[in-house]
Image 1 (cartoon, rainbow, N blue to C red):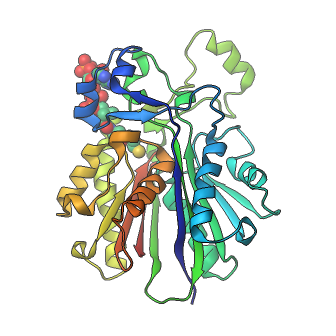
Image 2 (cartoon, rainbow, N blue to C red; image 1 turned 135 degrees about the vertical axis):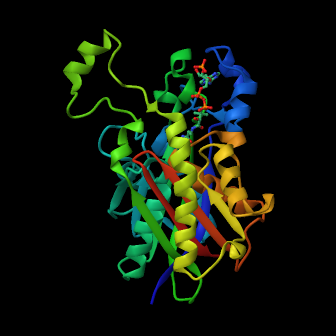
Amino acid sequence: MYTSRISGLGCYVPENVVTNDDLSKIMDTNDAWIQERTGIKERRHIKKGDGNSTSVMGVKAAKIALERSGLSKDDIDFIIFATLSPDMYFPGGGVIVQDMMDMNTIPALDVRNQCSGFVYAISVADQFIKTGMYKNVLVIGSENHSGGLDMTTRGRGISVIFGDGAGAAILTRSEEEGKGILSTHLHSEGGHAKELSLEGPNTGHWVPEIIAENVQENIPYYPYMNGQFVFKNAVVRFSEVINEGLVANKLTTEDIDMLIPHQANLRISQFVQKKFKLSDDQVYNNIQKYGNTTAASIPIALTEAWENGKIKDGDLVVLAAFGSGFTWGSAIIRW
Ligand SMILES: CC(C)(COP(=O)(O)OP(=O)(O)OC[C@H]1O[C@@H](n2cnc3c(N)ncnc32)[C@H](O)[C@@H]1OP(=O)(O)O)[C@@H](O)C(=O)NCCC(=O)NCCS
């Protein structure tokens, strides 16, 4: 029986730091409001001309992960790329990574599961490894949010929350029993699709209409979020899916060494931490520095936690995500 273990981790964020005070110069917001409601102090935004894009940042993170895994690009059998902000409407970022990293004609799959994208992606990678089909899978979560946010007062309820960045993991086949990814648990509830969504452009709202309606400024081409509804669902689903993963492995909350929640809002992470009676050392948060980077948030946090020596051999690491769709999921990992 094969399992998959994480053999390499990497992350990349653009150099350009955007503080809450910077945002308050371009919209009616302030540092106190943002910190109090979300915990965010600053985030990174791609700067025009800095050469970054969703795929470019993904490649930067992937190269670090690959080097740390001790593998070469030719050892990778499959690329899975999670994002809600691809460079192009189509094709997705996976094939661009394949080309930029000069990988052989290996398959590339794009995952469209927003904030749960990375958890979904490693679940897919894990299944391919477990069946014996692939040995090494490159999984990337990357987002360029800043290019698509309404940076005026009209969009402040959303635009202050999101940031740009990328994280990557190499999943490698292992035969060591009881180690690696023990299980993954995925869910969705499409009835709430519109509560956190970006409707245009879409195939029912094609380009000529967008051009025509843009003039009237009523096309939904910026993200919409029902913040309080999302918040209420997030705290419930995070808790449920962490429990589900623990029960499936006959574990309890006391077995958790490190919880890496998707960085949606510090208040959501704190609620979950309290519910599971975890100490500050058992939950990794970096939303203060990067905001919500959607599919990139878990791999960036996981990479940082590992780099800071907060994850050791044998630790039980729990990843948990919730986001647009709604989609949510968890991964239970014995490091
Ligand atoms: C978005 C969120 C921080 C908003 O906090 P909230 O307490 O729900 O705030 P509300 O939306 O009710 O807005 C409260 C007031 O602040 C104002 N406001 C909104 N954004 C603001 C900003 N950036 N700066 C200052 N004021 C702001 C609103 O206009 C509103 O003013 P009003 O009372 O005069 O109408 C919160 O709902 C949240 O975090 N939700 C979950 C979001 C999330 O996790 N998304 C990602 C999921 S993956």
